Length: 467
Image 1 (tube, helix red, strand yellow):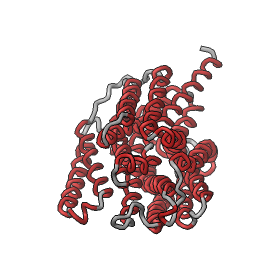
Image 2 (image 1 turned 30 degrees about the horizontal axis):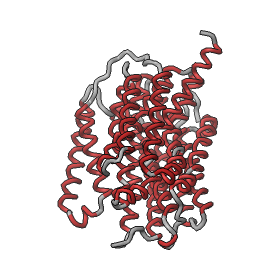
Image 3 (image 1 turned 90 degrees about the vertical axis):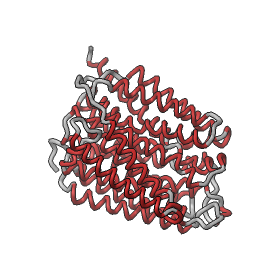
Image 4 (image 1 turned 120 degrees about the vertical axis):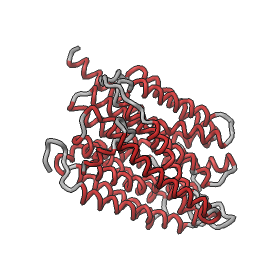
């Protein structure tokens, strides 16, 4: 094959990988701008509607290590296509005129798509030249977070003009397009080693995450069913302890906890978990604030489409950071880049807490958040990948994706919890002070992420390029 043809083939593969990554990120997070519409359409509370987002993040977190393990073996292409098939079926369920329970089931299926990122990174590392694979992996990492705002305005436009079912149908159509692109472009894996699936590990991880998210999201448990809450908490601790033991003793663990012996892996994932809470907390509460009618004493009463436009700066500046940050890594090192990223997210949270009387201020907060999220996502692979073998790219990045998804799920749940606590009995909307409290909670957690990166990752640099 000539150099020109090879270059064209690589460019096509990069475009396909990024397109699939953006689609699954946008579809998986469709719950954020549609929460209010779901509550109205299905006559459920806002906290119940919040589960259309939290549940997708939960299934993404549980299935990511399973698919990451498949992505490290010879069945990666089949796993990618199969996952997109599951997400497509989930999209159909959300679009059909079925009950709220079926909507949740469809959203859970769509959340599986969030696990694709680690496999797409494995494709990039195996099939792209060294000069292109690093930037593509960074771009995929950015797309998996900054890409969540890409579909919001379109979904909002469809919702306002054709209803929420049509918006979910739009997501289903996008997924089918991604499936067709992947079928045409994604090459077979070069790895020949057959992978074993750790089913007990997956079941235990699902139990742990489910118990914890229920405890965080459902405040009524603590007030009305304290014993149930206590049992769930104890069950989460026991299941977590058993899961750690199973993973450490398994020859093919769902999550290779031995990688946590690497300081870079520990620091990066700790920062991703804490930072992910603050990132997603702000992302979800901003859309709710923007859609709150002025009759509540605050808010802008935006329709879903206009609220989605508020998130456009998030994606634009996220992708901008994804292009700029990799060039700066050689000078500052990915460890310092992660610290700066956390501080940028902290600024966005503080801005929302202090200034949100004008729609421009919301857009500014989203732009700052997007740049922080994009720079964090671009720097993260440069911290983790130099300390793991190329054959373990999908597995190693799946750990990061699990931690990120759990952090996002916690952020979504904690944001909903604080707003629910600030909602008076009989009132539809929380007090404005509840949004301030939620923002400062996110800022506190994000500050902890900055401290972790500044200490644990101090001196980390791109492999072969000392700080």
